[in-house]
Image (cartoon, rainbow, N blue to C red; front, side, top):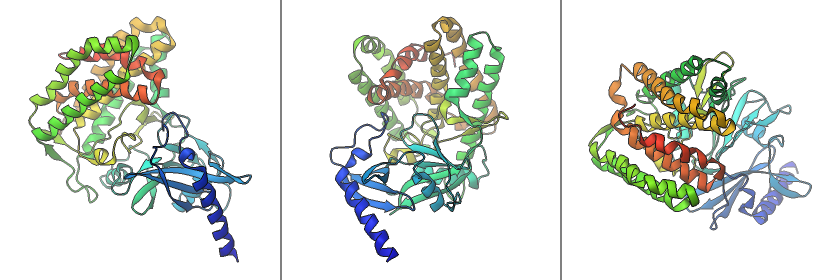
Length: 423
């Protein structure tokens, strides 16, 4: 009888979820609307609630759902679905209720802290096959890199990664909070700039250690280091040019006019890809910025969120890339952190404009020093092209997901275009 009752409950939940449609998937401005061709695929029952899955081409859309008062709705933190996922992974004891709370930052995926012990991340867009969020944590653990949250496990269905779990770092704060706060206080004269410079340098050294670990062979990634040929580098150039084209198409008004005025210079920098015929490649983070650097109360830092750019195709995220791309995106993010401070405190503009190149130099100097044993891993010829490509990506991201962010790349691009000879 118990099994029949469970089956009946599951059938009712499935029917209600299918009837509700893929609108259950669209939860935040970062997710956007469900694709028009999204079709219900299946319901994965958990001890509390379930995961609903829709298919759109090769892509799978995943949402936590729960029955509430006779209707099906998206599950929120506190409903128990994420705790049930953690229980499936053996990460928490589900014999008693485990607390759930969100990480408190905008994400394309959904991350919830369960029982103050584990962070469960639900991949809202996924597909079958390899995923960076599954193999990179395993690889880093295998080579002894411990400056990322300890992986606990992953939840898969038919070879599709639906969720992953990592140890929660008590008191951890992401860089959009802790780093921006340090720069803000320095710009307001409340702490010395040397403090901000020291923290910036530590991030540079951490990124270098992370990149050396990615380049170290393991049983997970036995061929961790390789070389890209001219054909691959040309694909990078074409992708960057296409992103710039998208940025020009998606912007309007004064922002578009300013971007159009800088277009010729931006294309010239992107042509720098063509001057490189071969370069080292490894697996890379793919979405590295200050927000991915967690800092705990004792000052230790950790690289987080190894899924890469969540809006990029999976095949792109698991393909080897240039470490210079991660360095460039971090260097751009240092600039962006400063722009955030200026938006809050316009009177700090001059101080921040002076700080941004200083921050970049501190980051790169520490990165080079920490990478001294493997200096060829970072191909500096690609730093400037990848940085301009990153700013183009920021315009596109803002237009599609977060319009309020547009002012940041709009302010940063002129400075980034002027990098040449100053990095």
